[in-house]
Length: 208
Length: 208
DNA sequence: TCGCGACGTTAGTGACCGTTAACGCACGCC
DNA sequence: GGCGTGCGTTAACGGTCACTAACGTCGCGA
Image (cartoon, rainbow over all chains, first blue to last red; front, side, top):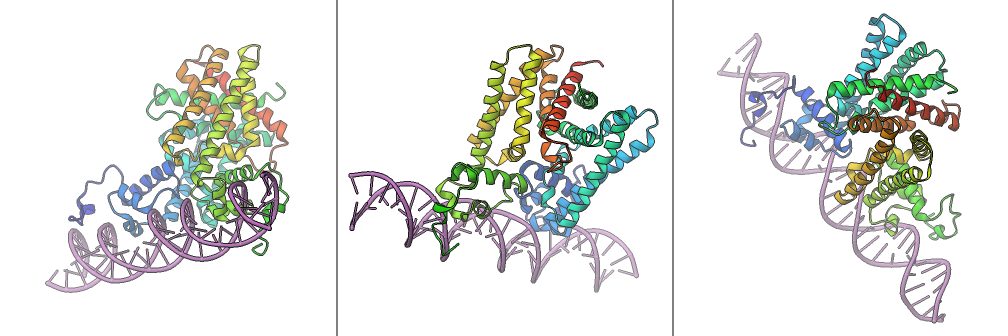
């Protein structure tokens, strides 16, 4: 390794697109496992086959990696949600189902990012944190609107709290045993979907 | 401050019982806010009015504080749950309600601990982590048993996944706007309770 | 061929941080 | 009155870590 300095040029790029994306993916995994402060740049570098300071050819610093990850997640969630709301016709219940489905896909496919999403937000520079929070807020409000259409009995504060709670529910996937205490991905997704819909429906049954 | 070295003896102990508990409470708050690695011992000391190394008169180290916090939480959750299961007569639905109520009380009253509970577990020494995980597992199994009594249609794997998901739902309280986007504590508790029951009920409606 | 930009490397630096050392004061007990 | 013990202080040490400096090597385009 140390005798072969140009390993990067002829190494078969493992699965990812380019170096940057590979770094981001490994950094996300490590941050989720041990926390932002618990991971050193040398570890991130080692995870992609280069060593420590080599990362600075791709990112301005460790903070920049986290920022790009969090902004990316929030942005993708929001744009995906907006797209679904716009494209799905049908009754508000179907739109809500689509939102739930999208969020579940995300939670199941990008567990490390889900973990980071509400865990390391405070480690960002002020400007980045504000941006991420704004994207998150828009995403929440998108859900709130759809939920209130689907369940007109819900007042706004209850709807918003319910949305936050259902996010917590859907984002619990990292806590489900890693390989498969559950049958399979499809069954897990279906179960989570049922849980979320059941929660919203119960929230709308105000008095009882 | 530096000219008055005995401030500790005559200072009115703010609200807590003794120094140890006060340190634990502030440490929990800080760990929850900025993460275990993100908080220095000097900050914890400052939060209780002493400075840095003075903490070592009460704890063996920073790790020991986190360990005591996490073991304490897990233990209290488990014993509280066991007590409720034993004491509540009535149908399994009532027992489940009692478990939910207890967990909600905990989530609303000890938000920092809830945050730590599933966030900083990996920062523990192996022995402590094993202990905490064992307590957590027992707590989960307690719930699984009650849930399956209340909803016999649920197979075990689904019941366990649902319990994890509902924990995620109930533990979402730190994400609800701090002072009160919600009416009040009682209303929040009632809403969370409804959401949780609705989720379980929906989980039990297997096919649809 | 030459040079230049992309992408690595190793060595070093300065800051931070957990922990220990050495010390001091106030109290309660004989 | 002496004295151990509880609880605090400041100073210093050792390790870790993000980041920079200086340098090397490939490959490509003029």
